[in-house]
Length: 148
Image 1 (tube, rainbow, N blue to C red):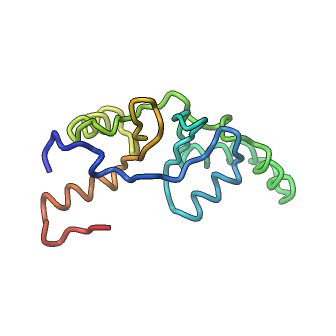
Image 2 (image 1 turned 135 degrees about the vertical axis):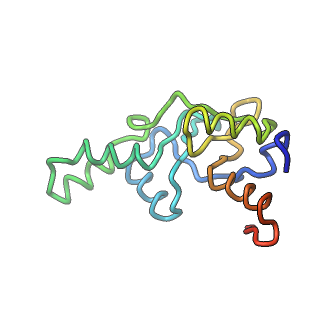
């Protein structure tokens, strides 16, 4: 792999995503079921935002810090919407962008995940620091590299 390798070859395709009208309970379900740390938010096929695990935990802490009744907590999880906690100003990559550009953006902004879109802003994948670590592993120790 080289700096000009397109990220389409290393990104995670067809990531789980949420819609702005989904609830925090849906976000909780995705995090618990899949173990992800970032969930793209898609509206009408287009990237609309992203929710990180930290966003989710912070919103839970802020919304429920004084609530101890489980019914109230469940009600809050089912009425608080993704659009209320997502980051809507999202940096993203085009699937044709290079590994070098991705690394530069990760380094500059200290991100851990970047949604990948096509020219029409449709979500086509996600690139994470874990994906980059797999590339680094292949470069440094190809005989011990992990592949999916």
